[in-house]
Image (cartoon, rainbow, N blue to C red):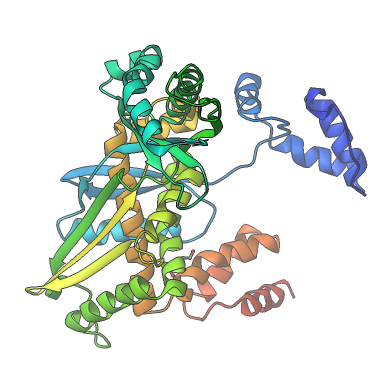
Length: 438
Ligand code: MEV
């Protein structure tokens, strides 16, 4: 039975493991061994990982793979992907190759603006608040000059701060709605530091504002925080080719393929149940690159799904149409990512991933990620409208099943060969393994 503990975070790593294993496992030694197996033999590297987060006991591995042959704006990329789900890297690589011979991927940055807000309560006259805001706005901007110095040197900084009246939604609720350019940094720390400074300055200036009543002087800061909804930090990635260059089989001509493809995307645009799965597939590709490059996949996920619902109904992040016998297929997605700061210069594999990409700036990384998402979606939709998803999926899953059942190399080779010509199901794999072992 699980136990409560106090002062856990202050214990040494060994003492933490002792406590955990003593109270949670029947086989204490086995649990300790499992945790220790994943320690890095390089003590400094292990210490680096331990210090990324609190109460770290061991490491949790993700497969780190690559998808080569991506031509993006006529430049060739090898894309790093950290993901555990079978088929994702294989599908990305296949899509890269397919579009490589059809002109490759073209991308465009639509915007790079980030957002942060100071949420506050003000009990009083709106006109007086507006006049006060306009008067103190230069002082607010001045208050963050020190914080902005190095960001400004890199070409970024505050874009604007505006007062927003939200009292129609919540009584007495207002915002300082702030926009920022953070260049190659994701910018969360920079933005939050600026916002907290704005909040403190705004509150103290209100306190001594002569035109305010005592209630009006007492502005209550509710919170100051960046937004992960970044509808103006958006990238577009696109592919296109003549319909006649699309897959052409006896079952499905290239013209029929194009129509079916566009219809599948159209279903995702209009049907939320499909859109969520469709976008999940897109995020398979994007998250894998986000993780490999040390970015925050929770922020990216939250922002992407909010963007997918920006018109009032959850919809597809990719779109497709046929015009003059050309299929055009694209993604538009907000991606607030960084190539400096955070884990980017700390985690050795993140450094390696960024070097593999040619040390991109944040805009270039946005482009690569959007391409990974589009490629992933192409792979999924292509399978769905032709063979079905399970064929490729089960092929990759076959090894997982065999590993689960501790198949040795000979068993794996024999069974993989068997399923080259037979349909893979979980029960059939087990049956073949048992037959072989008998
Ligand atoms: C599975 O991880 C992702 C798919 O379901 C995506 C899709 O349906 O488009 C295959």
